[in-house]
Image 1 (cartoon, helix red, strand yellow):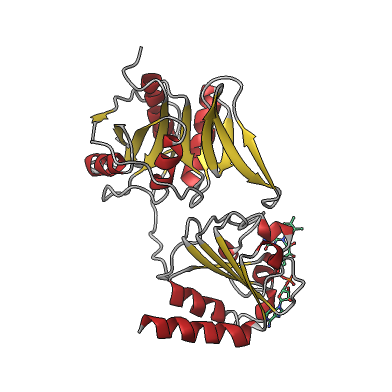
Image 2: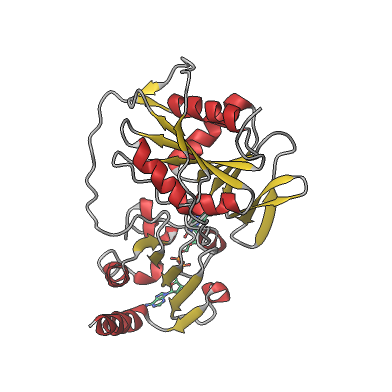
Length: 327
Ligand code: FAD
């Protein structure tokens, strides 16, 4: 027996040392609210749990379970132990995690231990008469498909930035989760060096606005134009694989099938033809703007706004116009 809601959807969210929840949290609670009652499992550093629990309630969690790690150097296993304990208590109809590196890692590890089914990279979640269903955008956004488990609660990872809705805030009802360590062997962090981000730009994964450049930029020097427009808009910088392969920008910026998937509010494609493998990573963006000198470029098939023109003529004018509006 459990005193948790019968239609509970367990949302796993990570808190930073300050107690701030990961950026994807708001979308995860909204996705859960569309399919049942959101219950949060907050994975936090020692001392960070209560601030994180308050934020989880504000984002829509009806109940919050706090699991502060007792061994921050252990990788993977403490999270799986906490999730297993939370599932035993809550008996949820589904488990939602962010499709982030850590979210995917935890989803896979937990599913292997619990023999659960995983639905990855969902862009929406709903419930039908048989249970919770994950919605996916596949084959470069050409098809929308649904997936679910035929047994047990599905473990669903949700693409960052794909859920626009927000859940209604709930009064805080939090408690500490009691976790019995499984004692399973965990990889350990012996030491680490913090890499200070050299850029003040938003991170590509989960960014609300993305300006991406392709082979049409022509050179590493000229690719700077992409960064200039991104900075004017407060956007992250993305790139096509051709731009990455040509050495215009490091591979971490690649958007697409073999790069990062984004679901931004605004996606501006500069000098990108719109190959299926690029579209696979950006087609679920809400507003797509394309600037390309070839009016027949496939990117225009999915663009909400298109400019047929030379990026080196159009983009500087766009930047000037945006700067003028800021004054
Ligand atoms: P191009 O296709 O060469 O297009 C350049 C565009 O710039 C053209 O449309 C041209 O009209 C325009 N242009 C040129 N000059 C200007 C100018 N001055 N002003 C305006 N427009 C201009 N690609 C990805 O992006 N992401 C992936 O994850 C990815 N994964 C792949 C996986 C596999 C297995 C394979 C086989 C391919 C993958 N690709 C991926 C590559 C993909 O198929 C395309 O080759 C690539 O996306 C093309 O990049 P592009 O649009 O920048 O270059």
